[in-house]
Image (cartoon, rainbow, N blue to C red; front, side, top):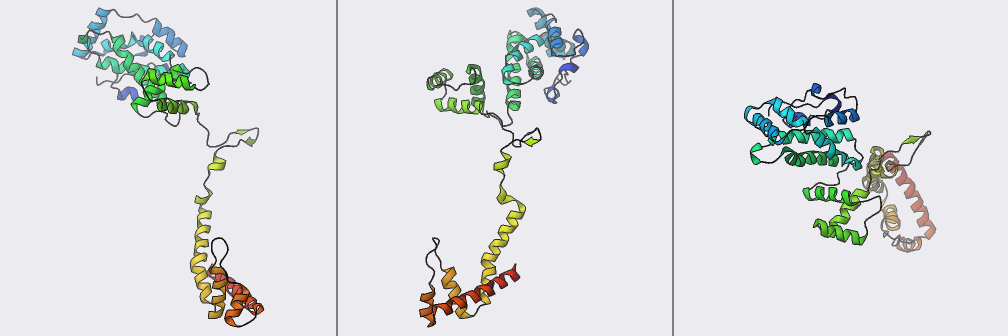
Length: 310
């Protein structure tokens, strides 16, 4: 099937998936009436005559052997009501009915393309799988910004749990055990998927209502440590604590440097370990007051050196 199939203007896929599906072209004139909305479309497709088994076989054979687009169109048109019926079962996901029908129609087109009349199976039975597959993929792609199911097993569990879950209440332990046994999965898998189903999307930024912005995660999720000015300030502080202090110590005489190191640089993390004024007074043979004066003078000289370094 090399030609592309397009839906009527009122129900055309928003993406290029129909073209990539290797689709047919459905002429809008084939649908009776003016299709101004989804209700008019549903009424129109329900009035399209259904095909008998013999007619369906003849059209499918004609399309398969001669690539007759007219035969393919008739096969698709006669089954549009099937898509509407299937799509109605997925309205509980909060997605537009028209969008669900769009995706289902793409699945129907894929089914017609691959349908083999020699298998003695009606197209309706064959197309159900393709229609549901496209709708499932659309729901998983659009129901949440963050995917709730990524593997094939998780997708199956997702749709099974949605069909079993009634209301907003959580499953009881007995219900979880029963579902795990019924679906042949682990109890933990049921609990995890229910948690994913229950958790809604949260807006990162707050909404402005009545002139005031509501509190939102952006207020407490912002990483201030990565803010450019904070990063530069941290780097400057690191330089002052290493190279700056080393340079400031170099500006001191040996006695002053010994006093500063003993008083302030040999301190443990808990604040203990620094030498006292009296201990240093005994070491240098002067009074404790003299040690204090030397310390004060050295600190002043170091502050000047650090300011120049910065």
